[in-house]
Image (cartoon, rainbow, N blue to C red):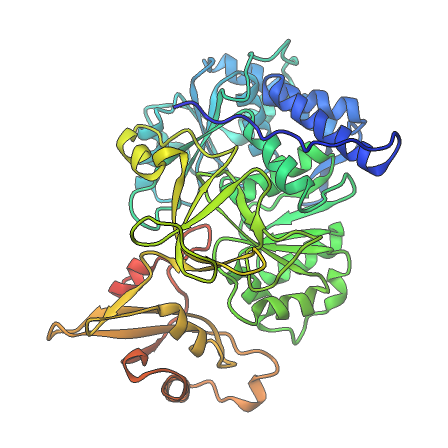
Amino acid sequence: MTPPTSAPSPAGTAAPGSAETAEATRTAEAAEATEGGNLAAALASLAERRGWIDRPAFHQDHRSWTHGEVHDLASRAAGVLAGHGVRPGDRVLLALPDSLAWVTAFLATARLGAIAVLVNPELTAADHAFMADDAGADLCVTGPGLEERFAGRTRLGADLLLALTHGAPPATGAHPAGPRTPLYLQYTSGTTGTPKGVVHCHGDPGTYHELIGERLLRVTPDDVTLSVSKLFFAYGFGNTFAFPLFSGSSAVLVDRRPSPATVDELVARHRVTLLYSVPSAYAALVADRADRHAACFASVRAAVSAGEGMPAGLGERVTELLGAPVLEQIGSTEAGHAFCANSVDDNTPGTVGRPVPGFDLELRDRAGCPAPDGTEGELFVRGPTLTPGYLNLPEETERVLAGGWLATRDRALRTADGTYRVLGRTDDMELVGGITVSPLEVEAVLRRHPAVREVAVASATDERGASALRAYVVIGVSSTAAPTFAATRADLQTSLMALAREHLAAFKVPRTIHVVPSLPRTPTGKLRRHLVRRGAW
C-alpha cells in the first residue's frame, strides 16, 4: 500500500515583505525540504538555510545542544551505525529514554535510509522481544540495563554510540529518499490487544509541523517545548522532535515521566512556552497547589492535551494554574499525530476542536451511514499522514483502513459550530442487567467529589452471574478540599455512593466503590478499561 503524499501548502498570495509572505516561505521551505529527499539531510539543510545552526535545539539536565551540533552528531553517528552493519532498509530498534542519544540515533538511522523502530524502554522484556521479532530488528540501540533483552541481535548501547560518534568523521551524504519512503515504525498502545506496528514515511514529520505545529500552534524559533508524552509515542514525537527541528525552536528532554514538582522546575528553568501533556498528568499537576506557585508558569503561552478526553472542569483548573489556554486535540498512532484539534486562534473548551487542515472526518452510525450533527457516531478519518498500513498484518490493515478511511473506534459527535466532542471508545459501553450504560456518565458524577482525582467505572459479573457496575477511585485531595473532608475510605465510599444516588438512575449507581492507589493505564496515559472490568492490575 502506498502512503499518501504531504498535504499541499495553502493557496493564495500575499504582499512582498508581509507576515503572510514570511509564513508562506517557511511553509514552502519545510515542504520542499521534506519532499526533496531524506528527512535527516533535509532538516540539516533547512537549519543552515534558516540560520538556526547556533540556536538551541535540545536541553537536557544542565546542558544544551544547538541545531548545528545535533545535525553534526547525527551525521557522524550515521557512520557509526553503518560500521555496525546498518544498510538502507534495515530496521534499527531504539529502546531509549528521551535523550540526545535518541535524537541522534533516529536522525542517523534516517540518514542511512534505514527504518527506526520506536519502542518504549519501560516495556516488559516480553514486549521488547515481541517488537524486535515482529519488526525484524537488525540492530538494537538500547538504554542502560536493556542490552541483555536483545541477546542474539546486534546491539549498541546509547552511551557507546555517543562516545564513538564524537570521534567519528561526518558522513559524506544521505541515502536518497522521498516522502513515501518508509522512515519509522511505532507500535500502537495495545488498549485493545496486541500492539501493531504502524509505518510512517519521510514526508510525514514535515507535514505534522506544517499542519499542526505551524498552522495551529504557531510554533516559532523562540518557543521552548516540554512534552510529558515521550518521543517514542506519536504525540510526543511531533511535539519534541518534528516541531522544534522544523521551526528552529528548542525542546526540553526528560528521560522519565516528570513529577508535578519536576514540571514546575523545568518550566521555570527553561522558560517553557508550550506544555504538552495528558489529562491524568494535568490532574496530578493541579491536585495539590498548597506549596506551588503559579508564577513559575508565567512563560507558558499554551498547554496542549491529548491521549484521552479532558474531564469536565479540569481544563479550567489547568488554565487557572498556568495562566494559559488548554488546547485539546485527538490523534492516533495511525495518523502520526493529531487529526482534530483546537488552535491558539480558535479554541473551544470541552471539544477537540476542528479537523486539522488536510484531514477529513466522518461520523457513521451503526449502519455505516453518516450521522447528523448533534448525533453520536463512530469517528472515521482520512488525511495526508495516515499510515500505509500495519507491519505484517495485511488483513488488519484492510479492516481498519478500508477505503483509505481509518476506523478510530472513538465515539464522537459534531456540534452545530463544526467542532467535535469525543464521547469515549466504541468498546467503552458497559452492559448492566441487559441495559447499555456509558461509564463516562457515571465517572463524571463521581469526579465531582473534591477528593477524587481519577475514577474508572466498569461492569463486572458476580458469582451468581449477575452484572453490576464497580467504581475505582484515586484520591487526590486538593488544598481547598482538605479542611472540609476527612479522607477515610469509609467516609469517601459513603459520600460517593450518596452522590451517585442523587444524580444517577438506580441502575447506573455502582454496586461497589473501591479506593485504589492508581488506575491501569497504557504508557501513553490511556485507560485500560479491559483490566478495570476484571479488577486486575
